[in-house]
Image (tube, rainbow, N blue to C red):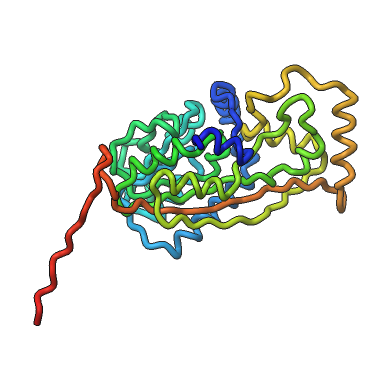
Length: 308
């Protein structure tokens, strides 16, 4: 069974409009920080996981850095490392590049990054990184994976740029994310709500890309909103609105929207509407290769311990 056929059998194969995604994230660069409550909470939880992982990277990549809100956290935890920001949105990256510029008052980040240099940053698609093979000790990716319709090419590229023993630390969203909105907007005319990849398929892709010992866990986070319009506005301001190629074209009728609002309204509790987010966190290591680039097996010989 081919990879594409296997994806379809699992029900995970879908396609995103990458050009539309880039335009939306470019527009969202000016507004996403005002609606990033979930992203900030996830970053805090990812950082806590690093308390229990022994890693001392010399170079770190924040992949899908957005406006760079995680960069100070990484610079503080790993003061001796070079932190690199990468994003496929030029507008997001411009804000990230300015975030850690030294200030006149100096301080910790000025000493870390040196004056007058700005933070190293690269405009790049996650599946084609302009970074040398085996040059990074840690790749950090906070909620970037939902912008991919297939994580495997990106995982392979991350595996390429990590050094042996390097760590991938990531978070993403699972299929139960926005389940209330999906139920209120049935897909009679196409995919109305973004689809998210299952945790088990993420794990399969990690192993297929060559990562060892992937560890993942899932938990449900519920945010509440005063009304449906506020939820939809937050999705647009974050750049997270639906960009599926199979999305309906054109405007929905008033009757369809009225039906969707009524369906969602039945979920109101204590004056608020719930929105579910299935949070997946994980990490995986780059193990020593078992084969060369041309497919030949690598045999490692251990020195014999002298007899006493």
